[in-house]
Image (cartoon, rainbow, N blue to C red; front, side, top):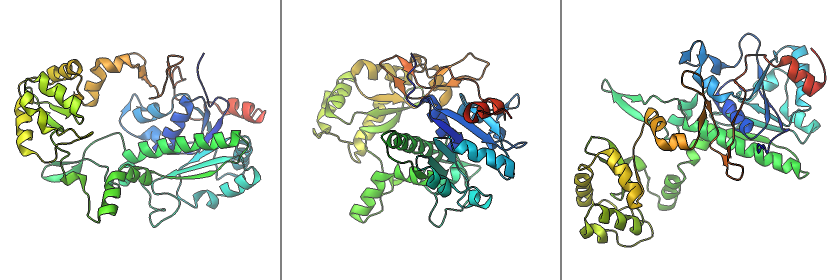
Length: 382
């Protein structure tokens, strides 16, 4: 029996970009009925994000399994009335437009919530509903750039953003949004009221730098992690085959295991016995470890970490992750090579040996479920 704690929860997704799509993706995995409300003729913008395979966007496919789609032109009075009828029976509305947009076309979320206090509205934007950047249009890497969350590479002598389909702002913003929505649902279920949730993807990315911010505030000195080394107990080294391998022997017991494994008991007391130690800026030990790691391949180091009970791992890229035996064992995807696979949720229900977000229907075509949703939600046939 599937474990679907959000079964029966109705979500209207008005989003046109990744953050609300990813939020809806997380809610679908928990059993919610998420209905995409798309503009006729244009649909959501994620469908057009490259790369495309046979005309389909990988990002659209990745975020929209298990959802349903209807098409409404919310600038049209008749379609807007249909939306209001749907909103009257929805539990949650997701949206990502800049502040003021919805009011400008005649949709007032505050009024909807006054009429039905149990309604949950989640506004998920780049920079939130308040502040000097609230009306700045943005995509994932825009928020990331202002949140110390982009990887810069040098190409042709110029700083360039490292290519990635993932944005820390998008990912963390959507995760915070899903948590907030679930919390508001719990409050409604115990007899309380809903909420208008203001999620800024920038806030979410900045929050991830809490330690740097706390240290800067407490000490009065700028703390820039980019200019510091964590120390030799927690750093990367090149293997014999030139692969970066991360050592994570922060606790003394793991450092003792590592030193025993490499036959270097003389290095044990360089860890002075603190609960967690990084080794500070011990350049001599750093060089010593560099020589040790250069004696074996990355694959050999990975096996040694397992055998020696010591934290450590090769730094992998995504195609290598997919070849790793742990990837198959954790059953993160379902589907066959050559087809679009379903990426399951990171949540696994241990009691029923099931991963959330399994066996979902393929992503919908625009308006695919128009009649179905209007019939189910409004008991009418359009």
